[in-house]
Image: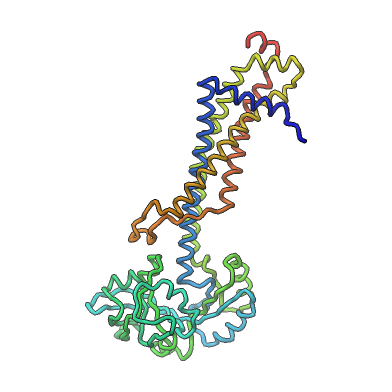
Length: 408
């Protein structure tokens, strides 16, 4: 059976005795409350920001593949099947799908027009349309039976809205060949409208059949690139690097994170800044702990002198005050984490706050509680409170026993 250190026992006794002193007890509660507030605010804020980051990632991967392989010069290539076979040798790769990118202009029945980026995919391959089917808003097509015509086009929600097009409407695609010649025009029927939740995608992307695109653009079986899907997102960097090593110039592999580097860098930077800003609350609480312990040392000057006289070393006495600051900090940190997690899970499952979907593309706060965030917050709060208890403990150790008894 372990015995509690005498310094810890005295620190706990001091904490209990202080309930009799209203002023001292109030300052202790303020110190605990400050730590609780700072920790809870950090837990909730990082949960919301992690949720938004995860939500954006899922929406991006609803349109983009994990890795794309293209030529460095941007030209099309015909030997995509042999390149695909090389890529499939990696056991982490689940599928390799050809695609074609083409920029043009789309015009609706009412003469409204907008720029468009056409992505041609193979409708006959189920993997090609799996994510599109999940994002379908309205449709005249049957994704499950793959009954999609060659003259069909699938439009992003914002793009369709900008040209006043609906499912079943006819649209004209125009692709300029040069500045001196008239653009080539093709008639397509809107087979479906998708909503990924990413404005840049929804306002510019359209999907047509791969074989039809090769015929219209006279590509003679060539493609722009290959969409590569892998088993786990955690392997993105490793798999992308291995794919690049297996390819020869002029082919290159880029991951979805490389293609959205600026966006995720901004989100990560914002998360770090919010952590630092809200961490100041915990720092303020640490100063409350310091002032609290200094006040206690003044109140207990006589007792400190008596303990020194009966044989307590200066180090043992300083440990008493250090332990008290540590206890206050740990109580505040524990309550803050519990409170923050309770609020976070309430926001996640109870739908307390509704968001305007037209602005945020989500109707509730996307909460994602990450264990590493909670651990980091707890460790940060622990370190700050530990540092906050060092100075008062050091000051106590400098008291002269005789002077403490005489003037205590």
